Image (cartoon, rainbow, N blue to C red):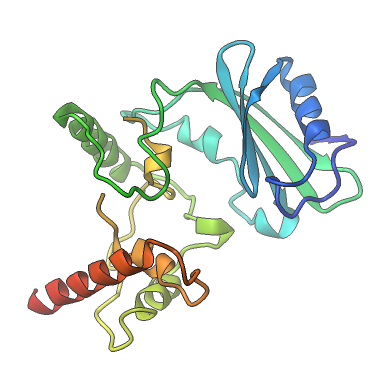
Length: 235
């Protein structure tokens, strides 16, 4: 683990200054970041390099690292038969005087643009070969072994969490027991695939108690939830 001077603790990387962090990544990976391509998210940054690769930078507090670590990119590099960018190199360091770690992972560039944002408002026009490739990758992933547990929004997924999410919009209850756990993509959304059907869990997140009243997805999500309930009752 390396120790170096970095930015002060940031609650939201979309608005906090990040130049010192980017300078540190360039030094450690011996590359130059194209800052005109910088993508800022709440807990991560990303940018293209001068060697035509992509670097993703994540900030995480100690209490959010957990026993399984946060080396997901390295672990994913061990998987076979899955279409994904190749991992090239990485670096990690502790922020001085803060219980915070930074990690940078350099990978190949994506072969194309993302299909869309995390939620689409129109059906994507994708060829049949795209769906076949997606299915092959998901099938290959499902039969592999891992000790890692998904942590959506840095919260470990559990049977209780699944049940609570479903109960938010199905208060009368359905059988929500997860009878089989297997490897899967923990953040499978249109922004993370190059080239829409909502699941129960996505509907539950949209319809959460703190959902924004003017969120345009609310009404479609409610309709989808009603349809899912009806389908489950008929099953």
